[in-house]
View 1: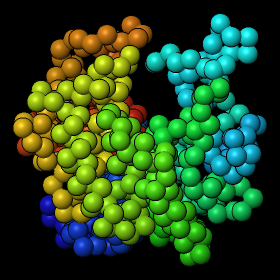
View 2: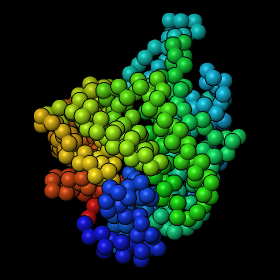
View 3: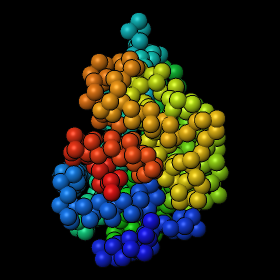
View 4: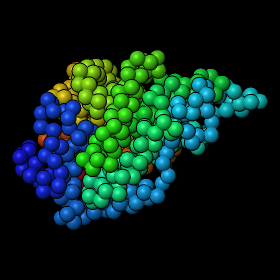
Length: 412
């Protein structure tokens, strides 16, 4: 990669060459983490060049960002229900696959229906949907600022972040003690930590808008302290311990969060240690010699879960680059991320998906293809020597225009 040339491109766009991550030593100082500055600069150039593969994604981004400008701030204080602590500053959610027991007069305790989402878990009564909306809005606003240079987008992202992390009356306590509660059974579970993966794009978005100074130095410090406290909770709490022992996408997203938040707060020793654990425990424990993630393929929505798990592995691969650790090429006994990505690739505009889905519509070629969109873009970036990944990714770009990930992971 010609970093000198890309540096000139970034400077020409009014961005600091410090955004480049050329060596592990400056990883903590980088303003990008999950995002690749080279790819973002490439996407910006494609928009300038009116590349038709990316203009629809750009239009989608601006539409979503302009809508986000109209949204009120989000806060955990807005939920209508309270966690067992009685403190609304504590995040609170229900397990999405748990339902009232029809055999019991009061429905308690709830019973599980794997893969069947209970709409009650996504209401304004709890924080699950609210966190997702907050994360998506901050993401599109930060990207809109990057691609347009219009500060109004960064200012709105800062307003949302200020309410969630900084303002005493509205901020969230840095824990997930009451995530994925099950009425009649438990007040919160380690499995609820899967929800805080939404703080990864928020982290990257706030890093992206940092040069605008829409957040004061003291506000930025408070947010970093929040992430540091939340990371400490992940590493020391019972819920964190439970999630760290999960042998599926939950465990991998736990590791992705630990590494991401450690990078964001400059705790490189923690990031490296967790990535080492992930290279042994997650990669070798979840991917078989054929590239299958068995724990995901056994679920009721195997295609969704397979690609979802690979999203977490993709984060870890990217963080390995920043830390100088070859996570993309890790693996023993024939197991590797590359094999898992090749397994998915064969079903993109190719072989018929052989696994049973809970809903027949989710097994259609169209559904299988769209679900692999981010997976193939990630694969094309990680393994440029494997032509099938770029071939599949390019086909997806043409077939399904308007996807935001096209701007984050553009092809050459």
